[in-house]
Image (cartoon, rainbow, N blue to C red; front, side):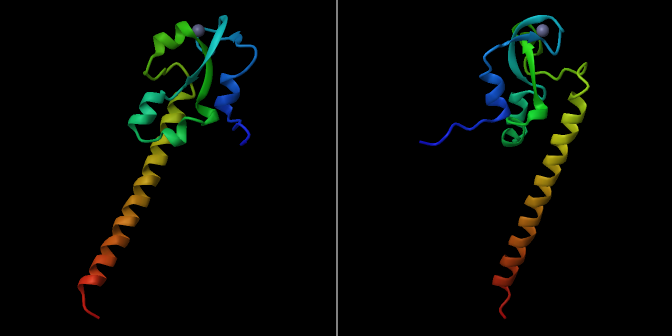
Length: 116
Ligand SMILES: [Zn+2]
């Protein structure tokens, strides 16, 4: 049997004691794991594999705050803008890779079309 993967997300989701200080309202409460850069937007941006388990994108907040935050950015959180910048940078890099693959493919097609 494979050992269970111990990701930061898994660790947070499975902690014994889920009571603590909410990262948003700063009140002592029952906490839940939240993606600072919203999980649904990670999906829309095609970045789920980069942001879902990203430790820097995780915080513990109470259910009330999570309901209020929903799938929106919380610009009161100083981590929000750096995370947006980080994921935009990843998107750019992915775009560069796609562009390079396109150029390589074009070269291959050109080579095929041009008799040696
Ligand atoms: Zn809260």
